[in-house]
Every structure is written in C-alpha cells, then in structure tokens.
Amino acid sequence: MTLSTTPSTRFAGLDGLRAVAVILVVVYHLFPSSPVQSGFIGVDVFFVISGFLITSLLLRPSRYGPLPSPRRLLDFWRRRARRLLPALAVVIAVCATTAWMLGGDVLVGMGRQVLGAATFSYNWLAIAGGSDYFTATAPELFRNVWSLAVEEQFYVLWPLLLPLVLLIPGRWSRVALMLIAAGGSAWWMAALVAGGDVTRAYFGTDSHAFGLLLGIALALATVNMPERAWMLRRGAQVGSLLVGLIGLGAVLVAALLPETPDAATFPGALVMACVGTALTIFAGVWPGSWFGRGLDVAPLRWVGERSYGIYLWHWPVLVLALVGTQRTGPEAGVPVAIGAAALVLSVGAAALSYRFVEQPLRRYGFRRAARALWLRIAGRPLMRLAGASALAVGAVAVGGTAAAIVTAPPTTSAAAAIAAGEQAMKDAEKAAPDEPDEESEQIEIADGTEITAVGDSVMLASAPSLYEQFPGIEVDADVSRSIWAGPDILGDLSSRGELRENVVVALGTNGPVDWGVLEQMSQVAGKDRNLILVNAHAPRDWIPGVNAELDDFADSHRSVWVADWSGAIAPHTELLAEDDIHPGEAGGDVFADSVEAALERVEKDRIRAEQQREQAPSGRAHHIPFLE
Image 1 (cartoon, one colour):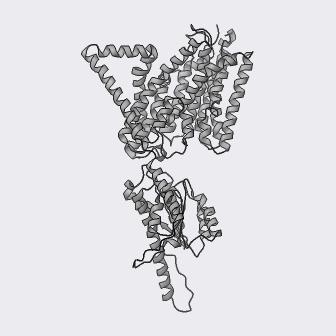
Image 2 (spheres, rainbow, N blue to C red; image 1 turned 135 degrees about the vertical axis):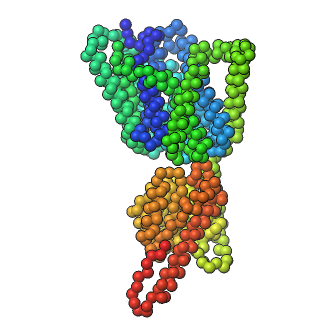
Image 3 (tube, rainbow, N blue to C red; image 1 turned 120 degrees about the vertical axis):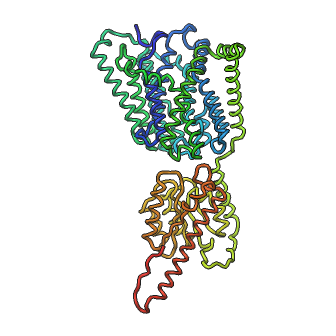
C-alpha cells in the first residue's frame, strides 16, 4: 500500500485545518480588536492545502489516462468549475444586488470587481487599479476574492506545468526545485515590501506563490511513498503527533503576531504559517495518524467542509452590514454586535449554499442540475412554485448585479471632495489673490494674505471653502499626511520666507499626535506668529486622544490656539462624505468657519492683552497671562 495513490483516499486532518484557516481569517476581519492580529495568514494555510491537495489529485491514476491527456485536463478543470463557480456566482449576485439597493460608495468599482472575479484576475486588476488591501478608506465589496484569483490561476497553469516537472529524474530533485521556487517567491515578496509596495507584494501571484509551492513540494515528497510497518508503531505515531502539534502551534503563533508593514510579516509571518501548515498536513496524512483524526473532530470538520462558502460570504456581508447601519466600512471599526451578526449571517448563508447549490452541482454537474430544476418546474404545483421562485430570485439577483455595475459612481464621495479641493488649489495658483472683503466688523480677523494653511486630505477637501472665505490664503494640503510631516513642511516654508503671520495646521486625522512634533512646529512658527491647530473628526480610535493632546498643548503655549472642527461638524455629519471623514462642499464651509472662529479668538486675545498692558501701573514689570 502507498500514500496518496487511490482515488478513494481521503486526507485526514485537511477539513479540520481548513476550519482553522477560515476561523483565523473571519476573526481577523469581523473582530479586529481580538488578539488575532495577523489572522490573514489563514489565506496562506489555504494556499498550502491547495498546493498539496491538487498536486496529489493530479498524480493519482485516472480513467482519462495520465497527464497531460486533454481529456484528463478537461475533466480536472470541469471538476474545479463545479466546485468553485456556483457558490461564487451566488455570493456576487446576492451581495451586488444588496449593494445596489443601498447605493453610494459601496458600488464604486463594481464592474472591475465582478470582471476580476469572473475572469480569475481580481488580484491583478486590483493592483492595476491602485487598490490597497491594508489601508483603503472605501473597502471593495469583493476584496476577499483576490485569493481565489490566485488559486484559480494555479488551477489553470499547474496541470500544464506538472508534466514538465515530472520529467526531472528523482523524487527529491523535484522537491528541491519546488522549495527553491518557493524561496524565490518569498524573496520577491520581501523585495517588493522593502520598496514600499506591500499591496503589490501581497496580491501578486508571483510574490505570494510560496504557500502553493510548499504544498506542491510536500505532495511530491509523499506521493507513492510506501507504508512500512514501523510507520504504524506507537513511537512513530507519537512522533507524528508531536510534529502536527508543532506545526499547528506555528500557525496559531503566526496569527497572533502583530502585523507590521515590513519583511517581518511579509513574508516572515506568512512563511512561518506555511511551514507550520506543511508540518500539520504531513502529520495528518501519516498512516494511521492520531493527529489527523483528532483534527477532524466533528465541529471542525463541519466548518471545514463549508469553509469555502464561509470565506466567500463573510467579507461582503460585513461591508454591507456596516454600510447599511453606520454608513462606514470596516476601516472605521467593527462593533462587536455587528461582527457577531455578520458571522451568523455568513455561516448561515454558507450552510444553505453548501446544501442547495454547491453539493447538487458538484454531484450532478450543471446539465443534470438544470434538468432537475426544470422537472421541478414542470411537476406538481408545490414543486412548480418552488422552482419558479428559485428562477425568479435568480433573475432578480442577476438584474440587480447588472444594475449595480451600470449605476456605480465613478469615484467615492470622499475622493470627489478631495478632487474638488485639488482643483481649487490649482485654480488658486493660477489666479491673482483677490482683495479681502471690506466689511465693518467689530473684530477684524486676519485676511487670506496673512494665512498659511498646511493639512491633510480633510483640509484638501475643504480647500474650495478656504479660498472663498479667505481670499489670498496659501493652502498646502495632501492626502495621507500625518503630524510627523508638519515640522519639515513648515520649516521649508519658513526658510523660503513664505510662512505667514497665521499658521493653520490640520494634521490630526491619520494617526496619534506627538507632543515633541507639536513643539517643533511651535518653534518653527516662533513667537511672532500665531499657530492654529485644527482638531480632528473621524471614526478612528485615536481621534479623542488627538483632540485632547491638541487642547493640552494649546493651553500650555501662549501663541497656540485650537480650531474646533470636530465640535463644529459633529452635529452636521450629513455634510461629510460616506467615509464620515471628508467634507463635501457644505462641510468645507463648516471647516472654514471653524478656522475663522479660531482667528477671531486670536484677535480677541490680542486685544485683551493690549488692554491689560495699558491698565498695568506705569514703570512696573508685569506678566500677561495666556488667554484662551
């Protein structure tokens, strides 16, 4: 008897390992505050399983003959299509239709997403479209399909390449070739990450193929390996159990490691998970393995058998739940209640899909399943009603998907607001400064020619309003800026003599602020300028700390004030884009108003300070306290 040779062989432990993989991914996405900080490594567990399982299946004898027989290839691809396409089609149709009903930013890029899923090219289309898996502010509804695209590409190409690999003499020469290829793929990921392109490294088939290649190497190493009597002895069984526990432990440790945007995670933690998965599989398929039977315990096996559907459903269900209830995506945080609801819905939908879609089509094929549906429609009244209802639901879902593609806006509301700000900055550079409005006001605040504004994408989206309210203002704003960029920008403007009397800084949206950095900006501004720090409003957990830090800093510095953008926009969040961060046209007016209110306080404090100087006894030293 040999390992992995007969068609009836079932690999022990694989369903349980699939369950572990999908649990890690689902917990990572649905419960981001959990200790599973790198749960996305579950995708790499799936990759290793796929590489091992598909290679083992291809190496088995078949009634269609050996590879590369055309009939053998067509049979393989037909079986893969039966296994993967029905569930994917249902998820896309149902979720795209729901997104169409909700409308808004969740529809952006729908055509590209559906095309990528249908052509197994989602990962490359996402790279070409500039999608960012880790920091995107408008999450794509079907972003999780990228990993299916990688596997589909593997299913298409590997059966064609395997016969060439088998021409290499010697089992271990083939294994060594696959290990070298896996190492090259991991190296390429590290190189891309070192160049700052984490998303390209993660999405790329070439840079993320090491898990698949490691699974292939394991299959080549174990196929047709004869079982020997000593393999079934107690000592060997205990040894395989220890190997399995070590491998599974490595997977879990990798999932608990903190995620970092460098080689420690990409590919460090991913490779650790892949090696652990290979050890786990090896221990599971060991003859008479205790470990494999233990890993296939009933609950895990049930989840593992439905893991494909659970993986497909969980992300779009989460996105739709958040958009429908909070008007934001997962990047703004996932409340535990919504995460739990998405989990229940995903598992339930996957179970129904497995029972009524995946299994029938996998067992009977597309033609026989369609014939069975037709017989139901033409049968008894109750069966006819059920069949007709199924067809009607399918037609609505297909129509809804088409409508979602056709009506999808070209860009998100936040991107549109930012684009308007960029255009306003370009127009301001071309136009000569307007004369400030001559209005009789009790408090004469600084006009635009006396203001330098430096900020992030929130200020950029507000630029049209700033130019309108403060003619002649100088605005320097860009996307993704943090507080750390402030000192260099202000220093550069100061060195060129372009830093004006009133310096407005809005850099609190993209991360926590640092007191030392604030101190540097205050020193650059100097005592002869007024530094106005605009606080932040965003559904991010660091925002309260940012605003408290800005208030404390202003309280302790004589020439620093806070513009309360957060307080001004909080009662009017309907004026923000769907990300609940970037202001639209009316929201930009609120931003400009908050800056104007801060400038009024600057002028009031100046007047009060002068009055105190005039009232102080002549010739007597006195201290003018800071007045907020």
